[in-house]
Length: 415
Ligand code: APR
Ligand code: PHB
Image (tube, rainbow, N blue to C red; front, side, top):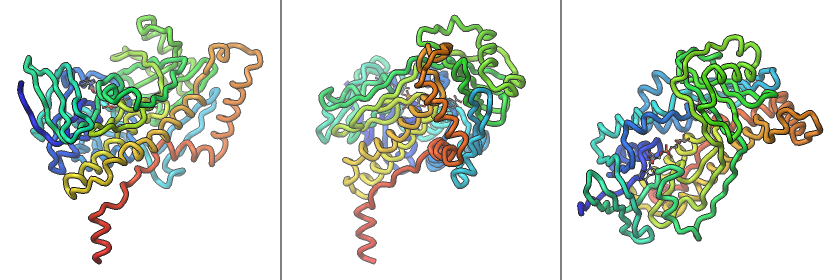
């Protein structure tokens, strides 16, 4: 048995785990990252690409923003097309100047992996049989196998950044967990192609035929989605079939501009809203997809992971820099307040932009739910207040600050 020691053990080297590891490292807080797959495997995952201001600022604080600031596309707004009419959501004008950054998650992960290598902090890829122990003691540990060796990692705290299918959430006793879940009756078929985007900004579409999203990764690489029934199989969708259906759902002018080409990635993702409460148990903290999942409509998945990371990083910095443990018990309640805002917004926008029953798509008989939704969308897009509601949440609600530290209060009292 090989024994290792660190301050913070991080399970998962996706965006959550790597961002947390880098931020802690810059505060001189030793940490170890474990992942069950290789870095190469992780970099093959195609994920979203819209960063809130908060996430971009966190990457700058982590010192890994050079490529993001160079290559990321600043978006001042996006469009919502409803039954062929496009309405622009003027993010910058409606939120006092705030914007979003279009920069692929795989690029973020690339930048974070490079920084991890430069930091020299220990990272164990292809670690197997990861198990968490003694979470409610002051000496938690993780056992795992690596390179055929049995290892025990002794630590002060464990950050479960291991995604929806990870081991961390399951390590909280079931009787202490409350899980909230909503599964949607459709999935998103996504295509990545080296073709120029149809527009400078994103276009979300609610058409008679269903949902479509025209996004991008750069001026030469596009990302498109259409919603498909849960029974759909990606092999059933040729590139030609996908492009033809996308054209039917995009507004006319965008459809006319659409440049098609071979898909370099094509996959179907299910849509789900999921939250685990609480997000901490003893010395274990759940971060990102390990604790919550959102439908991608609001582009909140990565951005909610970022606010979890920001909260946990600041709490642990207080612990090790100021010997102030007062905020440790507050992580879950602080993180969940913003998580639920992101969950609600993602559910709300998904409901507004998708047909929720197969009947609603083609049936002309009285489907009042469909009319209520169309009327709501019409009202929101037609009113500045409605567009501001969408804009404020899309750019991201502010991160919640920690309560004033004891050190800060003592300094203020002494002054
Ligand atoms: N042991 C070790 N590592 C594990 C285990 C395990 N038992 N289970 C999962 N992992 C690793 C996975 O291999 C993966 O690399 O944890 C990592 C989790 O990464 P993500 O799923 O990307 O989760 P997160 O870092 O929170 O990022 C959230 O990614 O999935 C998207 O939409 C999501 O944008 C959001 C972001
Ligand atoms: C993407 O570019 O992959 C993307 C953008 C916005 C979303 C979802 C996905 O809401």
